[in-house]
Amino acid sequence: MDHFLFSIFLTFPFFLLALIFYKSKLQNNKTNLPPGSFGWPIIGETFAFINQDHEKFIGDRMKKYSSKIFKTNVLGEPTVVLCGLEGHKFVASNELKLFNVWRPRSMQKLFRSSYQKGSSGAIPRQTEKQIQRASGFLQVDALVHYVKTMDTLVQDHINSHWVGKKQVDAYHLSQLLVLTLAARFFWGLEDQVRVEKLCKLMDIMMLGLHVFPLNIPGTILNRAMKAAGSARKEIMEFIKEKREAISSGVKMNDILHFMIANPDASSGRFMPDNEIADKVMGLASGGFNSPAMTTAFIVKYLGERPELCDRVRTEQLEIARSKKSGEALNWEDIQKMKYSWNVALEVMRLMPPLQGTFREAATDIVYEGYTIPKGWKVYWTVSTTNKDPECYPEPEAFDPTRYEKQTPPPYTNIPFGSGPRICPGKDYARLQILVFMHHVVKRFKWEVTDPNCKFMGGLNPLPINGLHVRLQSCSE
Image 1 (tube, rainbow, N blue to C red):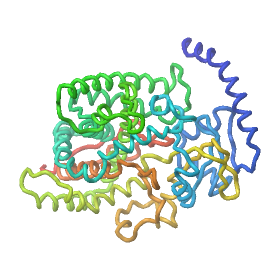
Image 2: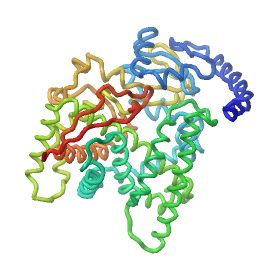
Image 3: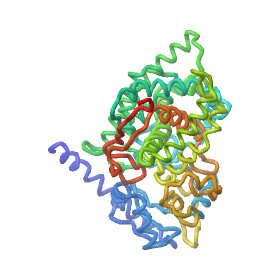
Image 4: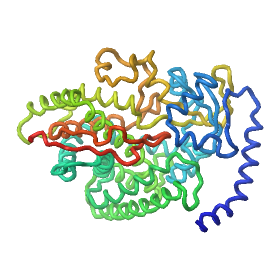
C-alpha cells in the first residue's frame, strides 16, 4: 500500500500538467461539436466505458444526446461515437481518406515498435505494408493447405484437454487452442510447454488492451506490461533459435520466417529482433482474444440450446460419414458447414467479441451537421446495429436460421470489420472455429454449469470466472 501511495505522489505533478493540457486541448475546439459530455477532467467517462455493460453505456447516451452521434472522453482522448448503420457505413467508406487507424495508448505501450514511428497512435504506413505482405499467409490459397494439419492439431487438443474430463473451462481451453494453432501456422512453434506459458501471459495482457494508460504498480496496465515483457523475452528467444535454424538451411514457411528473412520492400532494411517480437505480439493479440471468446461463446450457446446443438451435430456427422476412417477434413468439407457457421454468426451478433473499434480523424470532418476536429478519436460500436430490430427482427432471439432467410444488411453484423480494413484473418478464424465445432460436437454433449456467469464490461466481454461446462461423451 505504501508503495502504491508513493507512486501516486510521484505521478501527481504529471497529473497537473496533463490537466492543463487536457483543458487547452478541449478549449481549442469550440466549433460545432456533437452533443455529449466529456465527464471528469482527464479520466472523462473512461471508468464507465471500460467497466459498464457496453450496450448500456452506448444506449444511455444515444437516448440522452443523439441516436446518431455524441461526444465523450474515454481512455484519455476526446472521442466522437458514431452510431447505427449509417455511422458504420460512413467510417468504412472513408477509410484511408478521412480516418487513420488508431489504437489506445495502453495498446501502444504493450506493443511498442508497431507505433514508435507513428504519431498519436496511428499505425505507420511502413508497418501497414509489412502486415499486408505477411497477410498472404492468411489468404484462401494458403488456408487450403492448413486444413489437414489443423484437423490433427484440434483433435490432439481435444484428446489432451477434454477427453476423460467431467468438467472443463471452455474459455481458457479456447485460448489455448487458438494460440496453439497460431503458434504452429504463423511462428512455426510446436513446443506446447512454451505455448501454454505464452497463453497465460497473453491472458493477462488482454486485460490491459483498453484501459486508462496509467502504468504504476497496482494498475491493470502495469500487470499487463509485466506480462508483455515476459512474453517479449520468450518470443525473442524463439526468434534467435529461428534465425539459427534458417542459417543452418532448415526449410520453413511461416509469417515469422517471412519477417526474419525478408527486408522491407522500399528501404531494404531488415527488422531487428525486438521489432519483430513486438509485431508478432501485436498480430497474436489480434488473433487471440476474439477467436477464443467466439469459440467459448459457441460452446455456451450450444450447451444452453441442446436442440440447436443436435442440428449442428447432424450436419457434422453427415460430413464425417462421407469420409474414410481416419481421413482428415479438407477445404470442401468446411464449405459444407453452413448451419454451423450460421450458429457462429449468430453468436457473434449477440456476443460480439469486440464491441467496437477506434479511428482518428485525419482532418476536420463534418457529419450530421457537427464537426469532428482533426486528431480527435472516432469510435464506432457494433451494439447499435447488431440488435437493431429494423436490421434483425426479434433481435434478442438466438436464431441461426435468420441467415438462411435473408442476407443481413451491409454494415450491420460485422465481427471482422468492414471496408478496406476488414480483418485479414477472417477466413482463418472461420476455419479454426468450424474445425473445432466439427470435432467437439461429434464427441461430446455438455451443459453450462452457470448459465448466468458474469462477463466483464467494456470492449471485450470476457467471462470473469471462466466458462465451465459439464461434459458427457457421445459414446456414453
